[in-house]
Length: 419
Image (tube, rainbow, N blue to C red; front, side):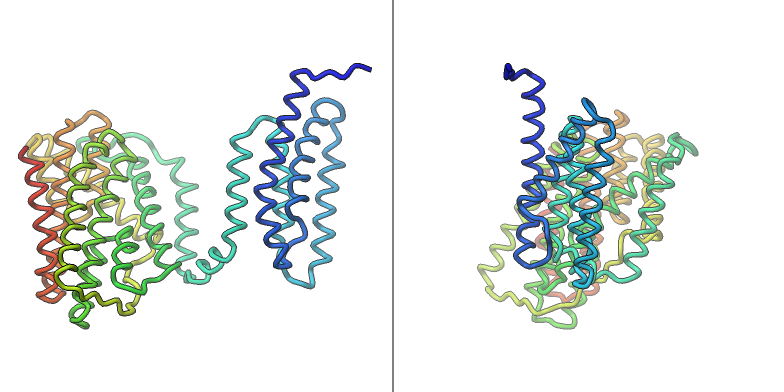
C-alpha cells in the first residue's frame, strides 16, 4: 500500500488545522466559564466540534451525501440532552448555541469561506467574553431605549433598501436614500457615545466631556455650564470637561468627513489637530497655574437616545435643508454662498454640513480649498454658538475660561482660511 501526500491531502489537513485554531479561540473562553461552573464544553470539546464540521463537509462532498443527518443530528441531540440535564440550574443555552455555531464554522472552513468563518469566530468569542459587560449595559437601558433601537433597526432594514436613489426637487437637492444613509451614519456614531454613557455613567465632569462629546459637544457645554451656576466650585472641572468635548468634536468631524472622502479628511486633519493641541496646552497651563480640579459626582447628561425615530427624522430634515441651502447658495453666489451656508449651518448642526460638503467634494461639485474652508467655518460657527450657551447659562469665570479656547479656534481657523 502506497502512502501518498498529494495536494488534496495537504489541503484538507490545512483546513482541519484552521478549524482547530478557530475552535480553540472559542474554546478558551468556554474553558474559563467551566471554572465558574457555567458550561460543559471547553478547550477540547469546541475545537473537536469545529473539526467535525469540516470533516462532515469533506465526507459530504466526496463520499456520503447523507453524513450531515448523522453528525449534525448527533450534535443537536447532544445539546438537547445537556440542556435538559442542566435545566434545573437555569444557566441558559449559550453553550448549546455556541456548539451549533462551532459546527457551522467548521463547515465554512471546508468550503474555503475562511474570512466568514474567522469573523463568525471573533464575533462569537467577543459576545461570550463580554457576557457581564453586555448584561450590565442591557440592564441600564430603559424600555424606551430598547423600543427606540428596535424601531430604528426595523425602519432601516426594511425601508432603506427600497428608497428611491435619485435626485428630486429644486436644484435636484433631495435624494431620499442619500439623506437616510447620512441619518444612519450619524445616529450610529451618536449611539456609540450614548451607549458609553449608559454603560459607564459619568462620575466626574471631565468624563462628561470625553464620553458626552462623542454624542453632542453642544449638550455637554449646556449641561456643564448649568452645573457651574449651581456649584461654582466646579468651574475648573467643567472647563476641562467642555474643552475635552470640543476636542472630541474635532475628531468626530474628521471621522465623518473620512467616511465620505478620505482625501478630504486628510486635508482637515492638520488644522483641527492644531486646534486640539491648543486646547491641551491651554488646559495644561491653566492647571499648572491653578491646581484646583474638582471631581464631584454629577448626574448623567440630558441626552436622548439618538435611535429615537423623531431624532433621526429631525437630523434627516436638517441635513436635507442644509444640502438644499448649499446648492442654492452655490448656484446664486458661488463659493461665497457655500461659506455662508457653512456659517449658518454650523450653528444648527456641524455633522450635517460636514457630510454635505464632503459629498459635494467627493462628487467633484466643489474644489478642495472650498470644502476645507467650508468645514472649518462650520466648526468655528458651532463653537461660537456653544460659547453663547456657556456665557448665558454658566458662570462668568467659566465663560472667561472657555473664551481662551474659543480664541484658539478663531485664530487657527482664520490663519488657515487666509493662508
